Structures are given as structure tokens and as C-alpha cells.
Length: 98
Image (cartoon, rainbow, N blue to C red; front, side, top):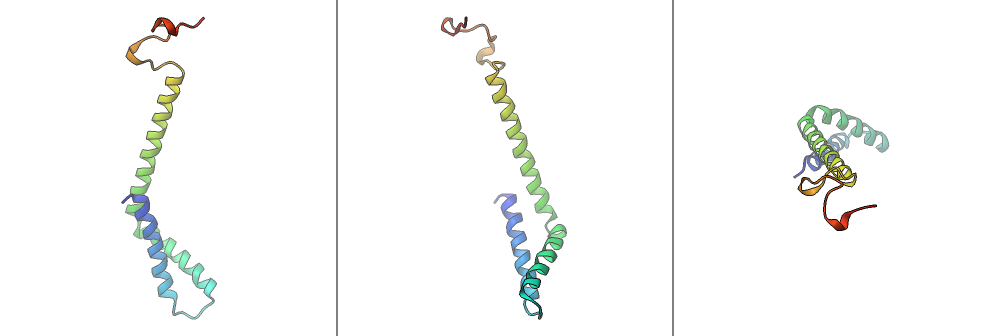
């Protein structure tokens, strides 16, 4: 399971748990939801730190792979990355440009 899914499910579970703990407290239902949201966010900052760091690492790795692929494609489109180590002016006879 990916770290993003684990972290998201952890956040939702924490929210539901805090909401269940506040369920029997007499207050406005909207206020109860807002308090559950704030308390679960504060608790997740401490309790889900490992999953959050794991998710951030996965996201950073994916961003680095996308950046490397983008640079590879840009260099290929610019003609800097020729197969077989040929120079841009060299190649088959039909590839000559005026």
C-alpha cells in the first residue's frame, strides 16, 4: 500500500475516532465537527509523523523521476541525445537537411 494511502486513511481514522469521542458531549453538531477536525489535525502531526515522512519521500522521488524524464525528453528533442553516439549532422543519407 502506498504511503499516501496509509497516511490518508490514518488521518480519516483519527478524525472518526476523535469525532466518536466527542459524540456524547453536549454541543452544537457543527462545533463538534470543527473540534474533531482541529484535534485530529493536531494529533496527526505527532502520531502520523512516520507515515507523513514516508509519503513525502515517495513524492520527492516521483518528482525527481519526472524531472529527470523531462530533461531527457528535452535533450532528445533538441537533438543532443542521438542513438549510437552520432553527432547531430551525421547519420543516414536520407536524414540530411538543407
